[in-house]
Image (cartoon, rainbow, N blue to C red; front, side):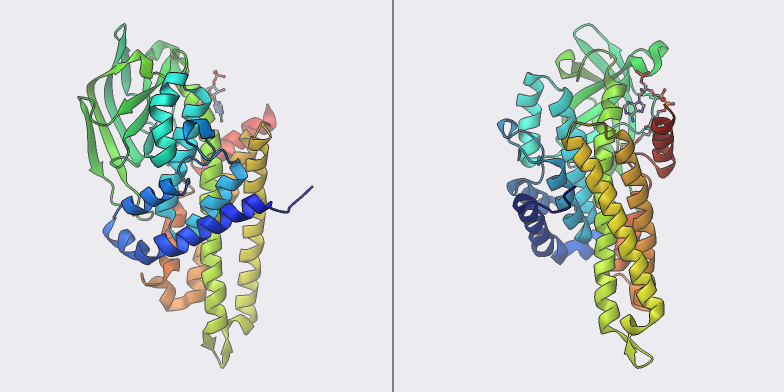
Length: 378
Ligand code: CAA
Protein backbone atom coordinates (compact mmCIF):
# COMPACT_ATOMS: atom_id res chain seq x y z
CA UNK A 1 0.00 0.00 0.00
CA UNK A 2 1.37 3.39 -1.00
CA UNK A 3 0.14 6.57 0.69
CA UNK A 4 2.60 8.74 -1.23
CA UNK A 5 1.17 11.20 -3.75
CA UNK A 6 2.92 11.24 -7.14
CA UNK A 7 4.69 14.32 -8.54
CA UNK A 8 1.69 14.81 -10.82
CA UNK A 9 -0.77 14.71 -7.92
CA UNK A 10 1.35 17.15 -5.92
CA UNK A 11 1.49 19.56 -8.82
CA UNK A 12 -2.31 19.50 -9.35
CA UNK A 13 -2.75 20.05 -5.61
CA UNK A 14 -0.35 23.00 -5.66
CA UNK A 15 -2.02 24.55 -8.73
CA UNK A 16 -5.43 24.35 -7.02
CA UNK A 17 -4.00 25.76 -3.78
CA UNK A 18 -2.42 28.71 -5.63
CA UNK A 19 -5.59 29.37 -7.59
CA UNK A 20 -7.71 29.31 -4.43
CA UNK A 21 -5.41 31.67 -2.55
CA UNK A 22 -4.78 34.09 -5.40
CA UNK A 23 -8.10 34.14 -7.22
CA UNK A 24 -10.80 32.97 -4.82
CA UNK A 25 -9.75 34.29 -1.44
CA UNK A 26 -9.77 38.04 -2.23
CA UNK A 27 -13.53 38.31 -2.97
CA UNK A 28 -14.93 35.33 -1.11
CA UNK A 29 -16.55 37.26 1.76
CA UNK A 30 -18.13 39.77 -0.61
CA UNK A 31 -19.52 37.05 -2.86
CA UNK A 32 -20.95 35.28 0.18
CA UNK A 33 -22.55 38.47 1.51
CA UNK A 34 -24.11 39.47 -1.81
CA UNK A 35 -24.79 35.95 -3.12
CA UNK A 36 -22.60 36.71 -6.12
CA UNK A 37 -21.73 33.88 -8.48
CA UNK A 38 -17.94 33.60 -9.09
CA UNK A 39 -18.31 34.07 -12.85
CA UNK A 40 -14.80 35.38 -13.60
CA UNK A 41 -13.25 32.77 -11.33
CA UNK A 42 -15.13 29.99 -13.12
CA UNK A 43 -13.71 31.24 -16.42
CA UNK A 44 -10.22 31.01 -14.94
CA UNK A 45 -10.98 27.55 -13.59
CA UNK A 46 -11.83 26.54 -17.14
CA UNK A 47 -8.54 27.97 -18.42
CA UNK A 48 -6.65 26.00 -15.77
CA UNK A 49 -8.44 22.79 -16.74
CA UNK A 50 -10.41 22.41 -13.50
CA UNK A 51 -13.83 22.04 -15.12
CA UNK A 52 -13.28 18.81 -17.03
CA UNK A 53 -10.46 17.29 -15.05
CA UNK A 54 -11.29 13.61 -15.59
CA UNK A 55 -12.54 13.93 -19.17
CA UNK A 56 -10.52 12.33 -21.97
CA UNK A 57 -8.32 14.96 -23.70
CA UNK A 58 -10.01 14.08 -27.01
CA UNK A 59 -13.12 15.77 -25.55
CA UNK A 60 -11.11 18.77 -24.25
CA UNK A 61 -10.62 17.33 -20.78
CA UNK A 62 -7.59 17.02 -18.56
CA UNK A 63 -7.42 13.21 -18.69
CA UNK A 64 -6.66 13.09 -14.97
CA UNK A 65 -7.64 10.50 -12.41
CA UNK A 66 -10.22 10.92 -9.64
CA UNK A 67 -7.51 11.32 -7.03
CA UNK A 68 -6.24 14.47 -8.80
CA UNK A 69 -9.82 15.69 -8.88
CA UNK A 70 -10.42 15.25 -5.13
CA UNK A 71 -7.09 16.88 -4.32
CA UNK A 72 -8.12 19.94 -6.36
CA UNK A 73 -11.62 20.04 -4.86
CA UNK A 74 -10.18 19.86 -1.33
CA UNK A 75 -7.86 22.82 -1.94
CA UNK A 76 -10.54 24.97 -3.55
CA UNK A 77 -13.08 24.12 -0.82
CA UNK A 78 -10.69 25.26 1.90
CA UNK A 79 -11.21 28.78 0.60
CA UNK A 80 -14.46 28.86 -1.35
CA UNK A 81 -16.99 26.05 -1.10
CA UNK A 82 -19.37 27.93 -3.41
CA UNK A 83 -16.86 27.77 -6.25
CA UNK A 84 -16.08 24.14 -5.48
CA UNK A 85 -19.68 22.96 -5.75
CA UNK A 86 -20.02 24.63 -9.17
CA UNK A 87 -16.81 22.86 -10.17
CA UNK A 88 -17.89 19.55 -8.66
CA UNK A 89 -21.29 19.47 -10.37
CA UNK A 90 -19.73 20.28 -13.74
CA UNK A 91 -16.99 17.66 -13.36
CA UNK A 92 -18.71 14.75 -11.70
CA UNK A 93 -22.40 15.00 -12.43
CA UNK A 94 -22.40 16.59 -15.86
CA UNK A 95 -19.10 15.78 -17.63
CA UNK A 96 -18.59 12.35 -16.09
CA UNK A 97 -22.23 11.40 -16.74
CA UNK A 98 -22.02 12.53 -20.37
CA UNK A 99 -18.68 10.86 -20.99
CA UNK A 100 -19.78 7.58 -19.41
CA UNK A 101 -23.22 7.31 -20.99
CA UNK A 102 -23.59 9.88 -23.78
CA UNK A 103 -23.20 8.96 -27.47
CA UNK A 104 -20.48 10.34 -29.76
CA UNK A 105 -22.71 13.09 -31.12
CA UNK A 106 -23.64 14.25 -27.60
CA UNK A 107 -20.01 14.20 -26.53
CA UNK A 108 -18.95 16.29 -29.54
CA UNK A 109 -21.76 18.78 -29.14
CA UNK A 110 -22.07 19.07 -25.35
CA UNK A 111 -19.21 17.41 -23.51
CA UNK A 112 -16.42 19.21 -25.39
CA UNK A 113 -17.49 22.77 -24.47
CA UNK A 114 -18.55 21.74 -20.95
CA UNK A 115 -15.18 20.11 -20.23
CA UNK A 116 -13.36 23.17 -21.50
CA UNK A 117 -15.30 26.00 -19.94
CA UNK A 118 -18.47 24.64 -18.29
CA UNK A 119 -21.07 25.20 -17.12
CA UNK A 120 -23.56 22.40 -16.74
CA UNK A 121 -26.34 21.58 -14.27
CA UNK A 122 -27.79 18.28 -13.09
CA UNK A 123 -31.53 18.42 -12.48
CA UNK A 124 -33.04 15.63 -10.43
CA UNK A 125 -34.64 17.22 -7.33
CA UNK A 126 -38.21 18.47 -7.45
CA UNK A 127 -40.51 20.23 -4.98
CA UNK A 128 -41.88 16.79 -3.98
CA UNK A 129 -38.99 14.52 -4.95
CA UNK A 130 -35.77 15.14 -2.99
CA UNK A 131 -34.54 12.01 -1.23
CA UNK A 132 -37.40 10.05 -2.77
CA UNK A 133 -35.96 10.50 -6.23
CA UNK A 134 -38.04 7.82 -7.97
CA UNK A 135 -41.17 9.98 -7.48
CA UNK A 136 -40.42 12.21 -10.45
CA UNK A 137 -43.34 14.47 -11.44
CA UNK A 138 -41.60 16.23 -14.32
CA UNK A 139 -43.01 14.58 -17.43
CA UNK A 140 -41.24 13.89 -20.72
CA UNK A 141 -44.12 12.78 -22.91
CA UNK A 142 -43.09 10.67 -25.89
CA UNK A 143 -44.18 12.43 -29.10
CA UNK A 144 -42.42 10.23 -31.63
CA UNK A 145 -39.32 12.13 -32.70
CA UNK A 146 -39.24 14.31 -29.57
CA UNK A 147 -40.31 14.55 -25.92
CA UNK A 148 -42.58 17.25 -24.55
CA UNK A 149 -41.15 18.30 -21.23
CA UNK A 150 -43.34 19.75 -18.46
CA UNK A 151 -42.56 20.27 -14.78
CA UNK A 152 -40.45 21.99 -12.17
CA UNK A 153 -37.00 21.26 -10.76
CA UNK A 154 -35.77 22.67 -7.44
CA UNK A 155 -32.46 23.55 -5.77
CA UNK A 156 -30.48 23.30 -8.98
CA UNK A 157 -26.79 24.17 -8.61
CA UNK A 158 -25.55 26.38 -11.50
CA UNK A 159 -29.26 26.94 -12.16
CA UNK A 160 -28.84 30.29 -13.89
CA UNK A 161 -25.20 30.19 -14.94
CA UNK A 162 -25.40 26.87 -16.80
CA UNK A 163 -25.73 26.63 -20.56
CA UNK A 164 -26.57 22.92 -20.57
CA UNK A 165 -28.88 21.03 -18.19
CA UNK A 166 -29.30 17.30 -17.73
CA UNK A 167 -32.94 16.90 -16.74
CA UNK A 168 -34.37 13.71 -15.28
CA UNK A 169 -38.03 13.19 -16.17
CA UNK A 170 -40.74 10.56 -16.14
CA UNK A 171 -41.97 9.23 -19.49
CA UNK A 172 -43.88 6.12 -18.49
CA UNK A 173 -45.21 6.32 -14.91
CA UNK A 174 -46.48 2.71 -15.03
CA UNK A 175 -42.88 1.53 -15.32
CA UNK A 176 -41.92 3.74 -12.34
CA UNK A 177 -38.14 4.24 -12.21
CA UNK A 178 -37.69 2.17 -15.37
CA UNK A 179 -39.82 4.72 -17.27
CA UNK A 180 -37.56 7.67 -16.47
CA UNK A 181 -35.31 9.43 -19.02
CA UNK A 182 -32.30 11.76 -18.79
CA UNK A 183 -32.55 14.58 -21.34
CA UNK A 184 -30.06 17.25 -22.39
CA UNK A 185 -31.68 20.69 -22.39
CA UNK A 186 -30.08 23.86 -23.69
CA UNK A 187 -30.64 27.24 -22.13
CA UNK A 188 -32.91 29.23 -24.40
CA UNK A 189 -35.04 26.30 -25.57
CA UNK A 190 -38.59 27.68 -25.89
CA UNK A 191 -40.66 26.96 -22.76
CA UNK A 192 -37.65 26.67 -20.44
CA UNK A 193 -37.57 29.37 -17.75
CA UNK A 194 -35.07 29.82 -14.92
CA UNK A 195 -37.05 30.52 -11.74
CA UNK A 196 -36.25 32.10 -8.42
CA UNK A 197 -32.80 32.12 -6.88
CA UNK A 198 -32.65 30.56 -3.41
CA UNK A 199 -31.46 32.74 -0.50
CA UNK A 200 -29.29 30.16 1.25
CA UNK A 201 -27.62 29.70 4.64
CA UNK A 202 -24.29 28.71 3.08
CA UNK A 203 -22.50 28.26 -0.25
CA UNK A 204 -24.09 31.61 -1.02
CA UNK A 205 -21.84 32.35 -3.97
CA UNK A 206 -23.26 29.36 -5.81
CA UNK A 207 -26.21 29.84 -8.04
CA UNK A 208 -29.17 27.75 -6.86
CA UNK A 209 -32.45 28.09 -8.72
CA UNK A 210 -35.73 26.43 -9.49
CA UNK A 211 -36.36 25.67 -13.18
CA UNK A 212 -39.67 25.54 -15.01
CA UNK A 213 -40.41 23.60 -18.19
CA UNK A 214 -43.59 24.20 -20.16
CA UNK A 215 -44.05 22.20 -23.36
CA UNK A 216 -40.32 22.20 -24.05
CA UNK A 217 -39.72 20.24 -27.27
CA UNK A 218 -36.67 18.05 -26.69
CA UNK A 219 -35.33 16.05 -29.65
CA UNK A 220 -34.93 12.32 -29.02
CA UNK A 221 -31.28 12.77 -29.97
CA UNK A 222 -30.89 14.55 -26.61
CA UNK A 223 -31.82 11.49 -24.55
CA UNK A 224 -28.85 9.95 -22.72
CA UNK A 225 -28.79 6.17 -23.13
CA UNK A 226 -31.70 3.93 -24.01
CA UNK A 227 -35.35 4.66 -23.30
CA UNK A 228 -35.94 4.24 -19.54
CA UNK A 229 -32.24 4.50 -18.59
CA UNK A 230 -32.64 7.88 -16.87
CA UNK A 231 -32.93 6.73 -13.28
CA UNK A 232 -30.01 4.35 -13.54
CA UNK A 233 -28.08 7.23 -15.16
CA UNK A 234 -28.91 9.55 -12.25
CA UNK A 235 -28.02 7.01 -9.54
CA UNK A 236 -24.76 5.93 -11.16
CA UNK A 237 -23.70 9.51 -11.81
CA UNK A 238 -24.53 10.47 -8.22
CA UNK A 239 -22.33 7.64 -6.93
CA UNK A 240 -19.38 9.45 -8.53
CA UNK A 241 -20.66 12.89 -7.55
CA UNK A 242 -20.66 11.89 -3.89
CA UNK A 243 -16.88 11.53 -4.00
CA UNK A 244 -16.68 15.16 -5.13
CA UNK A 245 -18.95 16.36 -2.31
CA UNK A 246 -17.02 14.26 0.21
CA UNK A 247 -13.85 16.03 -1.01
CA UNK A 248 -15.63 19.36 -0.67
CA UNK A 249 -16.58 18.54 2.93
CA UNK A 250 -12.99 17.49 3.58
CA UNK A 251 -11.73 20.81 2.20
CA UNK A 252 -14.17 22.80 4.36
CA UNK A 253 -12.89 20.88 7.41
CA UNK A 254 -9.22 21.28 6.61
CA UNK A 255 -9.68 24.97 5.77
CA UNK A 256 -11.37 25.61 9.13
CA UNK A 257 -8.78 23.51 10.98
CA UNK A 258 -5.83 25.41 9.43
CA UNK A 259 -7.40 28.73 10.45
CA UNK A 260 -8.07 27.48 13.98
CA UNK A 261 -4.52 26.15 14.35
CA UNK A 262 -3.03 29.47 13.25
CA UNK A 263 -5.34 31.45 15.51
CA UNK A 264 -4.60 29.19 18.50
CA UNK A 265 -0.87 29.91 18.12
CA UNK A 266 -1.37 33.68 17.84
CA UNK A 267 -4.12 34.48 20.32
CA UNK A 268 -3.20 34.71 23.97
CA UNK A 269 -5.45 34.01 26.96
CA UNK A 270 -4.47 33.81 30.62
CA UNK A 271 -0.92 34.88 29.74
CA UNK A 272 -0.12 32.25 27.08
CA UNK A 273 -1.16 31.29 23.55
CA UNK A 274 -4.42 29.32 23.25
CA UNK A 275 -2.36 26.46 21.79
CA UNK A 276 -0.67 25.98 25.15
CA UNK A 277 -3.99 25.28 26.87
CA UNK A 278 -4.84 21.61 27.00
CA UNK A 279 -8.53 22.27 26.31
CA UNK A 280 -7.54 23.72 22.91
CA UNK A 281 -4.83 21.12 22.24
CA UNK A 282 -7.39 18.33 22.65
CA UNK A 283 -9.80 20.06 20.29
CA UNK A 284 -7.05 20.39 17.66
CA UNK A 285 -6.05 16.75 18.13
CA UNK A 286 -9.62 15.54 17.58
CA UNK A 287 -10.15 17.81 14.59
CA UNK A 288 -6.92 16.64 12.91
CA UNK A 289 -7.68 12.96 13.56
CA UNK A 290 -11.16 13.19 12.06
CA UNK A 291 -9.85 15.09 9.03
CA UNK A 292 -7.20 12.44 8.38
CA UNK A 293 -9.80 9.68 8.67
CA UNK A 294 -12.11 11.53 6.26
CA UNK A 295 -9.24 12.03 3.81
CA UNK A 296 -8.43 8.31 3.83
CA UNK A 297 -12.06 7.48 3.02
CA UNK A 298 -12.19 10.09 0.23
CA UNK A 299 -8.94 8.91 -1.32
CA UNK A 300 -10.00 5.27 -1.06
CA UNK A 301 -13.27 6.00 -2.88
CA UNK A 302 -11.41 7.91 -5.61
CA UNK A 303 -8.85 5.12 -5.91
CA UNK A 304 -11.53 2.44 -6.24
CA UNK A 305 -13.23 4.49 -8.96
CA UNK A 306 -9.93 4.90 -10.81
CA UNK A 307 -9.32 1.14 -10.57
CA UNK A 308 -12.78 0.57 -12.09
CA UNK A 309 -13.78 -1.34 -8.96
CA UNK A 310 -17.13 -1.04 -7.21
CA UNK A 311 -17.02 2.25 -5.31
CA UNK A 312 -20.71 2.74 -4.37
CA UNK A 313 -20.31 1.92 -0.67
CA UNK A 314 -16.94 3.66 -0.39
CA UNK A 315 -18.32 6.87 -1.95
CA UNK A 316 -21.33 6.88 0.38
CA UNK A 317 -19.13 6.22 3.42
CA UNK A 318 -16.74 8.99 2.40
CA UNK A 319 -19.59 11.46 1.98
CA UNK A 320 -21.30 10.43 5.21
CA UNK A 321 -18.17 10.69 7.32
CA UNK A 322 -16.56 13.71 5.65
CA UNK A 323 -19.77 15.77 5.88
CA UNK A 324 -20.25 14.86 9.56
CA UNK A 325 -16.60 15.81 10.14
CA UNK A 326 -17.17 19.14 8.39
CA UNK A 327 -20.01 19.90 10.80
CA UNK A 328 -17.95 19.02 13.86
CA UNK A 329 -14.66 20.57 12.81
CA UNK A 330 -16.11 23.88 11.64
CA UNK A 331 -18.12 24.19 14.86
CA UNK A 332 -14.97 23.62 16.91
CA UNK A 333 -13.01 26.06 14.73
CA UNK A 334 -15.59 28.75 15.52
CA UNK A 335 -15.39 27.80 19.20
CA UNK A 336 -11.60 28.20 19.23
CA UNK A 337 -11.99 31.63 17.63
CA UNK A 338 -14.47 32.65 20.35
CA UNK A 339 -16.33 35.88 19.61
CA UNK A 340 -14.21 36.49 16.48
CA UNK A 341 -15.43 33.19 15.06
CA UNK A 342 -19.00 34.47 15.11
CA UNK A 343 -18.39 37.48 12.85
CA UNK A 344 -18.30 37.47 9.10
CA UNK A 345 -14.81 38.86 8.56
CA UNK A 346 -13.39 35.65 10.03
CA UNK A 347 -13.60 32.88 7.45
CA UNK A 348 -14.56 30.15 9.93
CA UNK A 349 -18.01 31.72 10.27
CA UNK A 350 -18.68 31.13 6.57
CA UNK A 351 -17.10 27.67 6.58
CA UNK A 352 -19.42 26.60 9.40
CA UNK A 353 -22.46 27.69 7.37
CA UNK A 354 -21.05 26.11 4.20
CA UNK A 355 -20.45 22.78 5.96
CA UNK A 356 -24.16 22.03 6.55
CA UNK A 357 -25.11 21.52 2.92
CA UNK A 358 -22.62 18.67 2.52
CA UNK A 359 -24.93 16.59 4.73
CA UNK A 360 -27.87 17.40 2.46
CA UNK A 361 -27.08 17.56 -1.25
CA UNK A 362 -26.18 14.68 -3.55
CA UNK A 363 -28.00 12.48 -1.05
CA UNK A 364 -28.58 13.34 2.61
CA UNK A 365 -26.64 11.53 5.34
CA UNK A 366 -29.72 9.37 5.86
CA UNK A 367 -29.68 8.37 2.17
CA UNK A 368 -25.95 7.55 2.44
CA UNK A 369 -26.78 5.23 5.35
CA UNK A 370 -29.45 3.56 3.18
CA UNK A 371 -26.95 3.09 0.37
CA UNK A 372 -24.26 1.73 2.71
CA UNK A 373 -26.56 -0.67 4.52
CA UNK A 374 -28.06 -1.96 1.25
CA UNK A 375 -24.53 -2.64 -0.02
CA UNK A 376 -23.64 -4.40 3.25
CA UNK A 377 -26.74 -6.58 3.20
CA UNK A 378 -26.98 -7.50 -0.47
N1 CAA B 1 -26.27 3.11 -7.79
C1 CAA B 1 -26.79 2.56 -8.90
N2 CAA B 1 -28.08 2.20 -9.00
C2 CAA B 1 -28.87 2.40 -7.92
C3 CAA B 1 -28.38 2.98 -6.73
C4 CAA B 1 -27.02 3.35 -6.69
N3 CAA B 1 -26.47 3.92 -5.62
N4 CAA B 1 -29.39 3.08 -5.85
C5 CAA B 1 -30.47 2.56 -6.45
N5 CAA B 1 -30.16 2.18 -7.69
C6 CAA B 1 -31.05 1.57 -8.69
C7 CAA B 1 -31.58 0.24 -8.20
O1 CAA B 1 -30.71 -0.81 -8.55
C8 CAA B 1 -32.91 0.16 -8.93
O2 CAA B 1 -32.74 -0.22 -10.27
P1 CAA B 1 -33.19 -1.68 -10.82
O3 CAA B 1 -34.62 -1.84 -10.42
O4 CAA B 1 -32.96 -1.58 -12.28
O5 CAA B 1 -32.28 -2.65 -10.13
C9 CAA B 1 -33.36 1.61 -8.97
O6 CAA B 1 -32.20 2.39 -8.83
C10 CAA B 1 -34.37 1.95 -7.91
O7 CAA B 1 -33.78 1.63 -6.67
P2 CAA B 1 -34.65 1.29 -5.39
O8 CAA B 1 -35.71 0.30 -5.74
O9 CAA B 1 -33.68 0.93 -4.34
O10 CAA B 1 -35.36 2.70 -5.13
P3 CAA B 1 -35.77 3.38 -3.79
O11 CAA B 1 -36.80 4.36 -4.14
O12 CAA B 1 -36.03 2.38 -2.72
O13 CAA B 1 -34.40 4.13 -3.32
C11 CAA B 1 -32.70 5.84 -3.46
C12 CAA B 1 -33.67 4.91 -4.20
C13 CAA B 1 -31.38 5.12 -3.30
C14 CAA B 1 -33.21 6.27 -2.11
C15 CAA B 1 -32.62 7.03 -4.40
O14 CAA B 1 -33.90 7.62 -4.54
C16 CAA B 1 -31.63 8.09 -3.95
O15 CAA B 1 -30.42 7.92 -4.11
N6 CAA B 1 -32.14 9.22 -3.43
C17 CAA B 1 -31.31 10.39 -3.15
C18 CAA B 1 -31.33 11.31 -4.33
C19 CAA B 1 -30.20 12.27 -4.32
O16 CAA B 1 -29.05 11.92 -4.06
N7 CAA B 1 -30.49 13.49 -4.69
C20 CAA B 1 -29.48 14.50 -4.83
C21 CAA B 1 -29.93 15.52 -5.82
S1 CAA B 1 -28.69 15.99 -6.96
C22 CAA B 1 -27.84 17.26 -6.22
O17 CAA B 1 -27.91 17.49 -5.05
C23 CAA B 1 -26.93 17.94 -7.16
C24 CAA B 1 -26.54 19.31 -6.83
O18 CAA B 1 -26.98 20.24 -7.46
C25 CAA B 1 -25.45 19.54 -5.84
